[in-house]
Image (cartoon, rainbow, N blue to C red; front, side):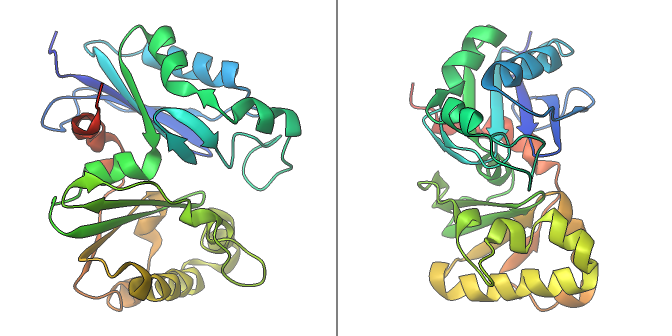
Length: 252
């Protein structure tokens, strides 16, 4: 068994995907995706990831990326998994209480029988694409908006940018999320994405911006041209390939 093989699990609002990655970030298995079940108490979350992990062999550590504010493997808040039927549905107060303070790293380490890193999904995505020089910001477009920031290749404290207000009382998560993309169509939605990026530029003054996530492929060519030379569209596969590289931040 390759001692550096990593099982990487990318947990989204609509689906949970896994693959085994080697030390170079190359996939050593075909990705497997399952639908995210709702409602999703923490025990079902652990059971779902355990069942997915059982379909892979050859890994002796795991990286799990999931939406929300994660600190040292503990969930401070997650936006989708506390709802009754998934994104944009009613928040269940009991689930909200259950997820707040949930030590996902310890629970998954015990369930999977291997060391586990639990990070925000955009942070894992960023690990697969950053150059490691200057201030690099990663934005992921999917069910909502993910964000991760790196300074000289070092992961900065996480900001839940997705929950910031934009217009009409909407958060970034909703304003440029999947629901609005489907409602508006790609052309109008892409203009929104560019407006958001233009508004963030003077706040972060990044050296390089990476835009990933499953919906990055829906940004229209005319709007991509407006983004500038400091912006790169990156493949969604980075959400898995970054799982091995993320271990360089582990301080255990």
